[in-house]
Amino acid sequence: MVRTGNCLGGDDPVLPAPDAQNQKGLRDVKYISTRGNAPELSFEEAMLTGLARDGGLYVPESIPTLSAEEIAGLAGKSYEEAAFVVMRPFVGDAFTDEEFKGIIARAYANFRHDARAPLVQLAPNHYLLELFHGPTLAFKDFAMQLIGQLFQFSLARRNERVTIVGATSGDTGSAAIEAFRGLDNVDVFILFPHGRVSDIQRKQMTTPEDANVHALALDGDFDDCQAKLKDMFNDFDFRDGVKLAGVNSINWARVLAQVVYYFTSAVSLGAPYRKVSFTVPTGNFGDIFAGYIAKKMGLPIDRLVIATNQNDILHRTMETGAYTKEGVTPSISPSMDIQVSSNFERALFDAYGRDGGAVAQLMEELKDGSFAISQGAMETLREHFDSGRASEEETNATIASAFTATSEVLCPHSAVGVKVANAYLGEVPMVTLATAHPAKFPDAVEAAMGARPALPPHMADMMDKDERVTRVPNDLGALEALIKERIAQR
Ligand SMILES: *Cc1c(COP(=O)(O)O)cnc(C)c1O
Image (cartoon, rainbow, N blue to C red; front, side, top):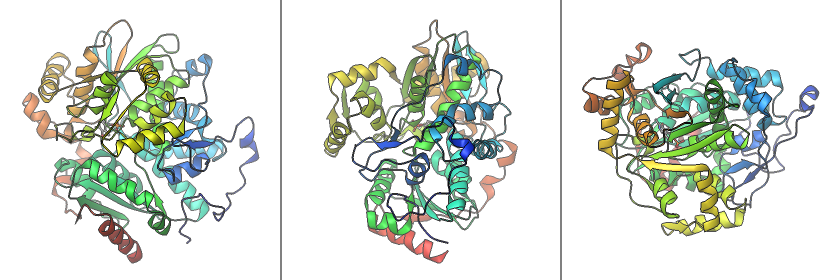
């Protein structure tokens, strides 16, 4: 089997000719880098590549739209049917309709709720979108299960093998491992900050027995993990040598998968005939950016509210126009303990009129800790996004009060969302995204409301299983050597 995977040069294997039936009316969608200096790629290439070679993130050259009739037509459809309609225009000729439907069906088959993303009501005009019914109990499964199926399909037909390296604050890693474990064409390495993920998050990453799964505990915080990942992508010898592929939320295919539930939930509440607002617990800005894409596609979204915990760089940025890094303070919502919010670059790219040079310049400035956003770009950002922050006490109080008022048990991330959303309730229905199952964060939930949420029965034995994990220093050379050695052993 050939190891190739970055799909950037003329030396890549030629893709099989697309099915003729599939080309009718479908443009070949092109993906461009937010820093304006990397090759244009197809959907499949952008997906297999992850980070662009100029350090930027891939975005579609233009955003396809759905008409009001097409959006109305999603009412009453299954999640899978809606997913096909929403994502199809972004995929170009990478798959036939039948192939793409099969990929979607397999991706969501392991979810434990028939609606996949059910909506429950919290208050007269406030709804909770439960995104935690996937195999690892967090919303990351929506994207990762799809990406697992997409990779498997693409790599098998190209007869290629890749090395996936992901950085995680907890939930991405377990979701990636669950999506890629046991697949033939992939080795998956997950970097997580040692001692900074919950016991359940760690167990989910360290207990799978598959030989292609490698959990690495890094001495540092999540931003260190993410920085090392970026460094690996920018080390072209290493990147090409191991055929590095990325599945962090920088991967466009992940953002795309998350667009779907904005449509299904808004349509349940009356879109396209009625506007809907969303509040999104935010770290890396991937999930809320998917909401922005849904809006650009024509979904009548009124407000998109960024909800941060005490690590509030995005909230401060919206208030002041200055994006300034501070240290990360560990919180009870660890999956949002982030200062460098990767996907924000995609929003900046649009806010700067898609000027890749301007974005590259800002990212250069960020190396010294901060950049100032132009007034024009801030106006564009504020047109789409509001923001709020929840302190640790407010998050705890929200878990307790939501339980008293509705019997709904919120995870700490979802509670940050509900707290921030409460300030934006009004005539337009508000949907707050519930990003994880409370049982993933039992200590925080118990401290807040006095009762310990139980793991779903299929996961109850996980805490007793043996762990497999390698402790690694915060050092690029050591990490790269370890990854090469592990691959050579396979
Ligand atoms: C990843 C994660 C978030 C943050 O999502 P982003 O796309 O990074 O903004 C929020 N809550 C939970 C539970 C998560 O796992």
